Length: 464
Image: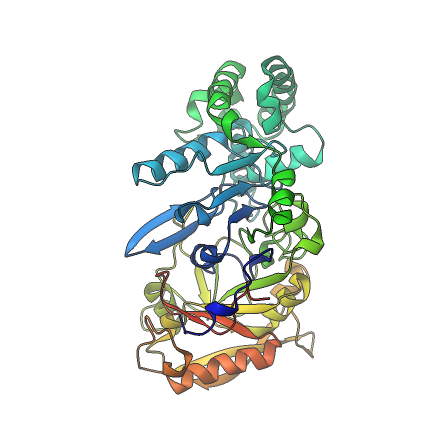
């Protein structure tokens, strides 16, 4: 980090929201972990275990899916807010993995009693729907198959089983029977689940395409005993922490273009990924959110289906897209799927800045562009014969956009591990300057490798 910035960091009561500005996978985990040095609490406020963050600390990789990245900092409290859909089984898999690595988790993790639960029938519905779409010749949405969407559907339909229901076995059982009757009808009658093959994780729960009550209930009650010490009124605890002058960091999952309202609908996730949902998804007032940091790669990537205006031919050796894919190790943390790669899209970033109210940008993976002699920057699109400079709404319109590029010089010198902006190659600094100028958002942080300490700080988000 550049020296001279840390002294200006506010000692009390400042809250920062970190969000992805593209299609996720922008490197939020590293930045949340890095910023946690200035926070006493880290909050996850949406999504489920379809998210994935990889942290590299002293050369050691750690993958997280549900637990906030701040867990890697001793003494920091971590909160899972009501906006998260929770798979208790996956949560404890993650906890046990961290504990094997010597990380103390259970005394520092608080889980909102308002979190809707992801149960085996949600994952079965997810898998069966994608299989039915494929069999019917329709394009798959590209979900992770982990039950996220069906769990959010139950929440919106006001029938979800929530964490607080685990405290009351009889109430839980009654609600579970009702939900199973509904979802098994959809699975068998509408989706034809008896003909589908489900993965090993679901096989213990399914007979003849139907999810069985007894194994689901028994496992839920087992996990309930483990979860009870961590159950909390997260909204109350966050407001009390704020009143006590603590700094809080709100960690978004996925990215803005996967937001169910503002993304490339219908190729989106099932939650709101934008900064405003940090309030609703954790139970704090929007006036408690003081700064919004948008994380963006120095290029673009996307996993799964949906339009991608600046996509390159990323599977062909010798092309810029292949360079991004291989040098950037572009595979999804959660699914292992290869990420599609393309040039930086400033018109897309302007949309993200608009819906998030970005205070500043963090550019990640700048080092991946090392060795490319020429770079292209999308500054707008041609759509129906007209030039536009802002990403339109919805997949159908975006799919018809033809990118308009500016060509900039690349660089051959390495940027890996650089911690002072002045030491970056001139062409790299010019590239960053142009991103700032086109998007209208200042760059406050630059990441030059996955390592926590390989970070250039221009303005600290926690500075008052």
